[in-house]
Amino acid sequence: MKRIAVLTGGGDAPGLNAVIRAVTKTAINLHGCEVLGVRDGYDGFINADGIMPLDLGAVRGILPRGGTILGTANRGNPFARKIIRNGKEVVVDVSDEITAAIKKLQLDALIVIGGDGTLHIAMELAAIGVPVVGVPKTIDNDIGGTEVTFGFDTALMIATEALDRLHTTAEAHHRVMVLELMGREAGFIAMHAGVSGGADVILIPEIPFRFESVIKKIQERTQTGAHFSLLAVSEGAWHLGGQPVFNRSGDAIYVPRLGGIGQEVGQYIQAQGFETRVTVLGHVQRGGSPTAFDRWLATRYGAAAVRVAAAGGFGQMVALRNAQVIPIPFSEALAVPKRVDLNSDGVLTARGLGISFGDE
Ligand code: F6P
Image (tube, rainbow, N blue to C red; front, side, top):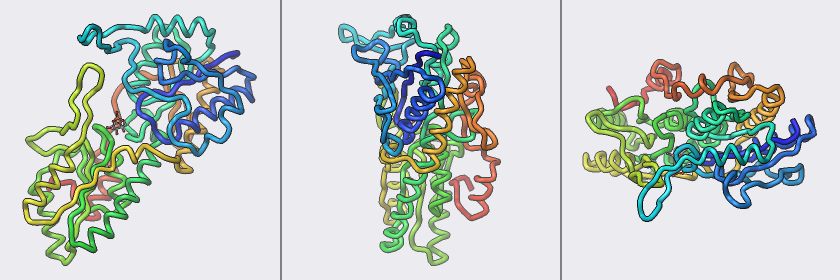
């Protein structure tokens, strides 16, 4: 390999810079490669000034930094790019421009760090001959084929700390505290943080809930002398007979965004006579410095991606399996999005502890 490029796409997650650093250092140290950074996701291939050189100096000091030094974009699908032309939405395929740019740059490999959407694009690019290797990123932990994505552990830590803080004020005021957490259609953040932060009720998209069941749990607690309750609510949670709640509808450029279920749940509980407050943790979950685990995982993913590229293993994504980082085909990783397994020991553990999922 003489020249490789790296890009970050989709929503940011703590640990992106750790991957960029590991890719750059490994490629330079082991292969004497020239490394390029692509700015703002795939858009960097077509934007002016979209490519920047990455040397050892450029990645110095970025390991603990949140965000991404390359910038990212979560609406730049080159195969179906939505743009407004003359006031109307048009979808254009600019993948030719991307492949032409990659050829012109004479890239021997492209390392794509992203979530579901970004990696699907990487798979499509691999199918048309682009030498791509993927690295799974997302706080949502919803990518198949890998036990965990980097970014999840940090989000979990922040969400758990938020629950701890809400716990003390809930107890002091005899209130119900509802914490709405991210995760899209996957309930991992709410589920893991809920257990780790001692929530009494965890609502996740994988288990549609009933309001009556949530109230039952709060009443039970009151009857046993616990005059406060803590709820971890995934943004994708929905009640039986209802549907997921969106706080921003889709338009020509943006995809719809989940949000608002925490408020709905809070209003219902308040209407039943329990003083309730709602907190939406939002993008706090994505910001700031990665945990040691995320730095460790992100670094291993980055280094492994370079090894896979050097061995010509394109069309694959690095994944964590049985504590080892291994390459797996994109097709396997992206076949089915990962969701909370209702028979997993995590769910059984929570039920055993008396945590309500709002379904009983
Ligand atoms: O996929 C990561 C994520 O943070 C989701 O948990 C959340 O639904 C979404 O991105 C928010 O997207 P945006 O940053 O575009 O508001």
